[in-house]
Length: 477
Ligand code: P53
Image 1 (cartoon, helix red, strand yellow):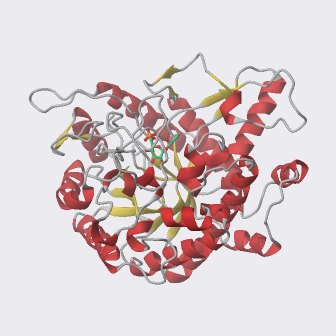
Image 2 (image 1 turned 90 degrees about the vertical axis):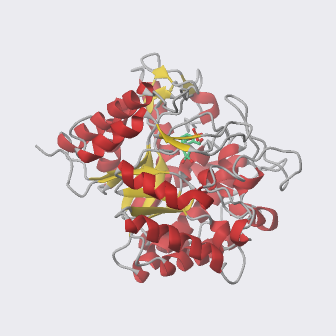
Image 3 (image 1 turned 30 degrees about the vertical axis):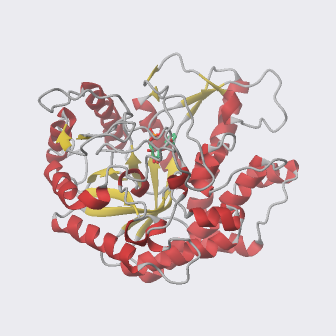
C-alpha cells in the first residue's frame, strides 16, 4: 500500500534573507530584511531608517549559506531531499529594484546553486518575493503603494524566468501574500509590501491597494512565465491559519466565515482570477478609493496560478464582538481568542495537526487545484549536548502528527498533493522575531541570538528521523 505518489516532492524550505547572509556580497543591494533588527520572544523587531550603526541586524550574516552552500547542499542530499524550496533575493539581481540591467554576479550565484542541487537530483522550488524586496523601492516609491513597482517586479520575474528556464520548474510569486490581512502593527505590511503607515493614512485601505498591485504583478508573472516555459508550475503562496468559531453560536460561526474570507480572498483572486463579490462591496461601502481598473481584471483572469502553495503552523479561533457592525469586519489583532482544546508552542502558536487536513480540504474544495505544503514546522529552543548531538523529540512529534493528517487528506479525502517541504529544516533566522534560538531545523547551526558561534552544522535526532520518512515515502513515521 503506497500512500503517496512515487514522485512526491519531499523537501525542505528556507528563504534567501533568512539563511544566505552575504548582505553586501556580489553586488547585492539592501533589502527590507536588512533594516530589521533582532527582536525576542514577545519583543517586536525594529524597522530602522536604513542600516544604522550599533544595531544588531541578524539577516546581514544569517547562517552564511552564501559562503557554505556547497557543503550544505551535500548535507541536504544526505538527508535525502527531493526538493529544496528557497527564494531568489531580489536585491542580488536588481540591487535597487529599479535598475535597468540585472547584476550578473547575483544571477551567477543562483546558477551555481541550482547546478549544485541538480548534481544530487534535488529539485529547486523558488519563491520570487519572500519578505526581501529592495529597500530602495521603499524609500523612492513607498513600496507596493506604487503601481510602478508592478513593472519592477515583472522585470525581475522575467529576468529570472528566462535565465533559469531549464533549471527551475516550480515557482511561487509572493510568499504569504495574505499575512498583511493583519494590517495593524508594523511587521506584515513591511515584510509583504515595504510599507510603513504614515500618520493619517488608513492602513486597511493602503493594504488593499498594495495587495491589489501584488496580485496583478503575480498574474502578469504567471502569464509571462508560461510563455517562457509552458512546463513551469507557478503557484500562489498563502499563510493558511484556519479560523474556527469559538462556539456554535451562529454569530461566532458567521464571524469565522468573515474572518476566513478576509484572510483568504488573496487566494480567490490568484486562483479564480477574480475578486469575491463580498470584498468589492465591502471596499465600496468603506469608501476606500482604490485604483483597481477593468484592465487589471483582465490581467487577473489571464494569470491564474497552477497550484496553491501554502504554509501551515497553527489555527486561530474567533468570537463575535458584543455588537458587530453589519459588515462583521474581522480585525485580526482584536478578534482572536485562545482555543482551549489546543496546546501552544513557547511562542504561543496553537498546535493543531488536524487543522492541516481541514485546510487541505478547504483549499481543494474551493479552488480544485493541486496543493503544495511549502512550510510546516515547530520552532523550539534546542539544547546541544557536549558530544554535539541534539535530542529533539518534540519536533519529531509535531511533524509526525502533521504528516499523519497530510496522508489522511490524500488517502481518505483524495487530495492532489505535490509535496511537503518543512520550514527551516536547517536552522536559520526567524522572520517574526529575528532570533536564532527559535529553531526549526533538522540540521543544527552553531550561532546564537547575539550573532556568536562557529556556524558549524551538525545533525539533530530529527535529521535521521526525516531521512527515514523520505526513504519510506512517508510509510514509516
Ligand atoms: P517565524 C507568521 C505566521 C505564520 C507564518 O515564522 C509566518 C509568520 C511570520 O512570522 O511566516 C512564515 O520565523 C514565513 C517564514 C517564517 C516562518 O513562517 O516567525 O514564510 O519566512 O520564518 C516561521 O517563526
